[in-house]
Image (cartoon, rainbow, N blue to C red; front, top):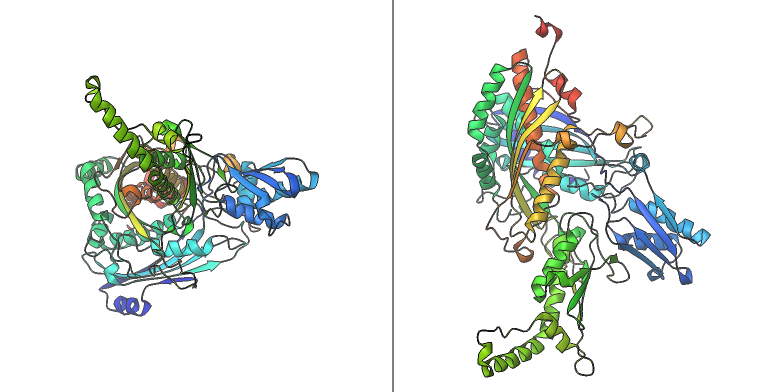
Length: 635
C-alpha cells in the first residue's frame, strides 16, 4: 500500500470478537475543477533572453522554476518573472497543471520573440487537465446491536491518472479523512493503493481527498444503520468522539475538538426533531415524492506543508503613510488580498484604504510555496503581521516623540483640552522618513514557517516537528432536507443549515461566502457531476453541454450559514482557522437526506432497506435505487 494507517493486527482481532460483522464496497467518481477562467498564460520576451510570464496559477515560483528549465535558464532563472494579479478561479489544478500551458506560451514566445498567449477552452481543459481522483474501496466493520462500532478495516485504490502529480499527498489525506469524527471502537486501519491509468493526470481539486473520504466514512455508517434498522443519526451519535476521546487512529490529539457540540447545536437550531417527524408524516402520505432529513458532523485536518515558508514584503511610503504589501499567495477568489490588507492595517494602525496589495510576483517575493490546502491566507497574513511588527519597532521612537510633543502642546493650550495626543500614522511615517532628517528603513520582510508537522527538519535534515501529516483540525456540522421525485430521480434541496468553527474570523463576510461556495460545489459533486471516459481514456463529458456543474436550480431554497461565535483558536493567526475547503464535505448532508428519501421509497416498494449506491449519485442512479417496477404503477 502507498499509505497505511492504524494497527492492522489489533483491528483483525477486534473484528473477530465483534458481535456482528458486515462487508461492503463502493466506488467514488472524480470531478472537474471547472474554474471560470481556464488554464491560461501570457509570455512576453524580455532582454537577455529573459521573460515575463503572466500566468493564471496557484504556484508562481514552481511555474518559474520549471519554465526556466524548459528555456535553458537553469542557474539564471531570475531572468524569468512569473506574475499573477488574480486568477479567475483555480480550485487546485492550477498548482501543477498550469505549467504545461505556461511552458507552451514561453517556448513559442522565445521562438518568435513576440508575446504569446495560450488559453484553453472548457473542452480542452477537460481533455487534458484531469480531475478529482476516483476511488474504489472495500470495508469490513464490526459492531454491537446498539450500533456501537467495535472495529473497521478499509482498503482503497486511488486513480492517479497517467502521472504522479499530487497523488501521494492526496492519498495520505484521503486515508486520514476516513476516520473522521468517529471512534471506531479504538480499532481502525486503512490501506490506500495508488494506481497509474490511461486517464489525464488527476490533480489537486478543492478539499483534496476529503470529499472521497467523507463518502467512504458515511457509506460505512449508513450500512451499519440500515443493517440494524436504526437511523443514520443514531449510529453517528453513538460513535461520535468527544473532547476527552478525540484522538486519531495514528495517535494525534484533535485539540479543541468540538464537532459533537456543533452537531448538537445545529440539530437544535435547525429544529431537527420536529422536522424529522414532519418528514415522516409527509412520506406516509406520499408514494411518488419522498423527503429526507440528514445531519452530519465533520472534521478536517490542515497541514502547513503546502504553503509554509511563503513570505511577505511590506513597504511604508513616508510621503503620505500609504502602504504597499506583497506576499507569496495567489488571489484565486478566496479573498487573500483583503485579509492580508486587513492584517497589515490592524498591525500598523493605519487606515485600510491606505493599504495596497500588489500582484504576486516572483521578482518581489522569492521562494513562495503553493496556494492550496486552505491555509495560504493565514500563512501570508502571519508573514505580513511579522513584517509589520518589525516596522512598528522602527516607528515606535518617532511615535513616542510625537506623542510626547503633542501632549505638551495640548497641556499648554486650554482650548485643546481633551484632544487625543496620539499621532496619526501618516505623521509617524513622515517623521521616520523625512528628507534630510531621518532615513529609517520603512521596508520589512516576514516569513511564517511553522515546525509542527513531520515534514520540517533542522539544517542537518533531522525531523524537528511532530510525527504527523497535519497541524490542526477544523470542525463543522450541517442539516439538510431534500425532496425526491421517485419516478425521475430529480431532487430539490429544500433547506440547508450550516454551523462552522473558524475560530476568530479575520473577515466573517469572506468566510461565510467560502462556506457557501464550498457547500454548493459539494452538492454538485455528490449529486450532479459525472466525468465519463471511454476505453482509451478520453473524456467524453467535455464542456458544459455534457458536463453539468451545479446551477441555481440545484441550490437550497433556504440556506443559513453561521460561524461559531466567541471561540478564538489559541494557536491560530489572530485566533483564526482555515475555511476554504472543509465545508465542501458538509454537502454530504444533502446526499444523506436523499438516501433517507430513497429508503422510504424502497420501503413502500417492499425492497430491502440495505442497498448499494456508489457514485455518481445522479438522477438516473437515484431513480434506480428507489426500486420502482411497472407493477407498482397499476391503477
